[in-house]
Image (cartoon, rainbow, N blue to C red; front, side):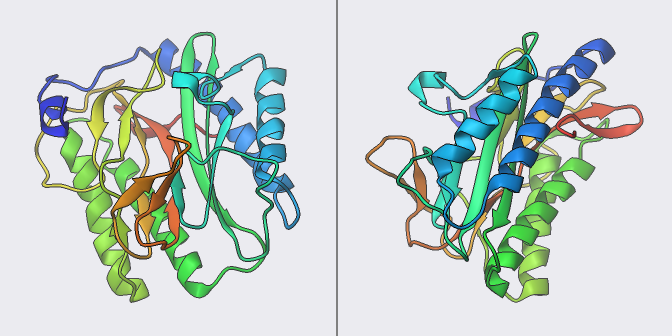
Length: 266
């Protein structure tokens, strides 16, 4: 099913009750704790596999289960995508973090049947100004998408807000950011990935409506070069086609009558 078909497949982004949102927030808090632990442990000489084990421990100690582990055969708890890797990087004992690395960690957990999904990007030691700007611009695009999660908006109003934030960041930072093609956000709830697909760019005013209780995982991915990607031989890791660096930020977010509610906070 293509993106346009998926945009038209529902009239309203699926809604959750207040109690269900609280349950999703509990799962999201576990994800936030795992990401916090990973960020605290990351540093020069640390392997991405050791970070994966830390995340798994935090999740299981909370009584939750890693969402990613075993998902379509994925072999780890986190996705650890370093430098030119965009998403779905498989943690490895051979991958040792070094000063100047730009690291994106994506993590999911399921607690009492409800999923949470979030991602962060950070540097190992001091980053170049361009890498700092890339991560900050990606995070700002996430924040713009979150701000668009209001009653009465449509799905592509969120996509458009993300894109407009990216375009504004290009002017502000005087850099050309690539919006990664073919990857984006998604519905989430009893399953980690659900319809609708949420692009990270596009015209506003299209797709299903956002209503109280609608939930989306919003996840902009930007690069310092092309938006085109390739998948490596492991059939998971996605890297930029031109070798440019990438950043990835994500939150699971609900629409409420009082405005957006981020469900992946500690």
